[in-house]
Image 1 (cartoon, one colour):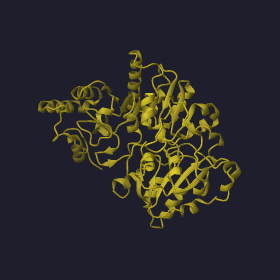
Image 2 (cartoon, rainbow, N blue to C red):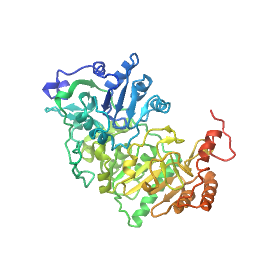
Image 3 (cartoon, helix red, strand yellow):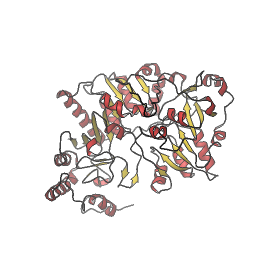
Image 4 (cartoon, helix red, strand yellow):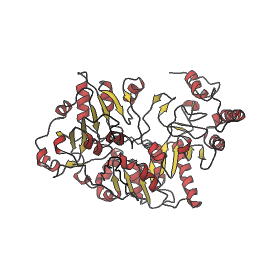
Length: 504
């Protein structure tokens, strides 16, 4: 087994345990690890370090591609092993520590972390931990189910630890396209004019002198949790598919649409799955994550090719992929997130971006990260990379949530702005669609209130807007009332007027 996985002679005597590898970490170090949306992450060294921190006062700054899988982030947070974390996370335990101020969190556009490292705007990486399928005869690393920031970490770090994951088939070689841009001011064009075009290699080149240890593991990625489509999700998906069908009818799009990007979650999966039933053909994806719906679309014959930075699927879907890998191998490509999320490429390809909002306001500003303006949820992820540069920028959310529709997700003013009105074209809730293209702020407000707001809140939002218009302004607001619904929820447990909910 070891000879299949370590084919570079100089590395054969560098095999160590995860516990030995974790001893290389020193207090206040900056560590960069592979991992993007729970895929291809460190499953041995980081957990071993978390266990070490349980009995030792030590902490690190941890930089990844995106979220980690299993309980790694939670274990690190619970054992006070993190001083600072970036650029994205989805773990409830870590989230609590962040919102308590016990772990500092830097929320970044996923395209920018590697750029900031290369340009020396962030501390230098002391140690990079990179998951690999195997190491080839020349010492190159063949990645696993994600690329993320791994290539940049390996390039920028002082030292490297390689985790070889024997649960990943050797046949994974060939599905990666690794490319690191030159430093400024000598940056070259990213010559990608179609989702299936390659510009790099199928391996990560590393300096053998940096490698201080190789750790073996056979732990698979955390499976994605696929939840059943509920009535609201189904309604949102149906509205979006009807929108695309109308765009085809109006000859603004063809049946192949444009390259698709979809965020993580049940809404995205529902929308993407819906394309299998619609009048679409020869679809392609240029996205961040390949989910269950990606492979369903390939199976249906609707999707020709999918480019992303990771594969994050359910356990059943993963088994299906491995059992039919030859069928998928020439239809998927995994790239560094600086390429999958590149503004240049997104704009050139004309990507249609579909992302999820926590809330949006009557003028089209979107909050996708903070609850009540202060508490971090997960992070902006790649939504901003795509929204700012998309052919069409679409955001979806439910119009209301909680018992008795206690929370409206359409508000006079968002409590935190991630995506301004300038980056948003289409808003969709289960109530309907607000097409904001070509509309001024006062026009947008009317369309959003009429089409996207839950009936329980429509009258109050209309009243707010009408009274704000009397006061005047290009974007009319009553600043003393703009956050009244948020304040009411904090005070009473509901955003509704004259409603008191027991706050537990």
